[in-house]
Length: 225
Image (cartoon, rainbow, N blue to C red; front, side, top):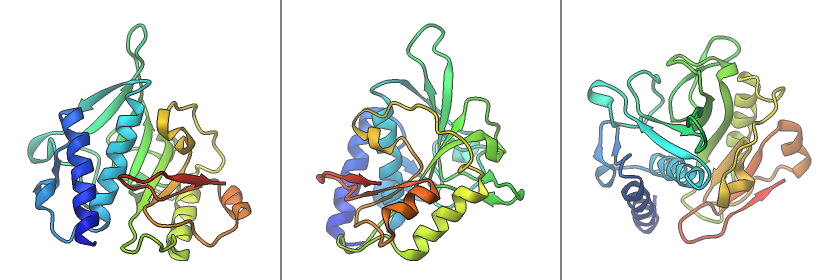
């Protein structure tokens, strides 16, 4: 990761963390600014916090710490959900019911009982610490590119398309989610600081997800299809 990119992402994460008063640590690394060889990890966390902040415009976001040594440590690598922090997405009306859980990098079971770890997952309010495919509502994956003009790779596109199949998401409706400035991303999506993949829009529609390009501090992102 270029040093300028890393600084821009870390600055954006710090601003988000300060405004949320939480989420300032990454598993095994202490504060975010101490991560070495961060590459995609920093970008993933930036994407997660940007989604959290967008949700705050319409919902109450409740930080839920984990337990033990990982109480406030979001995973740097795929990890079990138990003991990891998350956000509850609560209604602002009436009893402030929990509508969903927003998780970062934690594992869910696929349709074959294997374990998968989307970078960001919106899960049902009742999802346990060992979520099933039916507990997953929306997933987002982050793909950092060292060259901002580089496209989402064919391999990354294929992996995400397969993940949607393995979680059984293609056959289920996407919940109505109010994301404010990120409303275009209220869908399964690949997020990149680079450019769109070389796949046609028709293939994205068939696969059931969107792409967002130029998703980076100081830039205006756009999506397709």
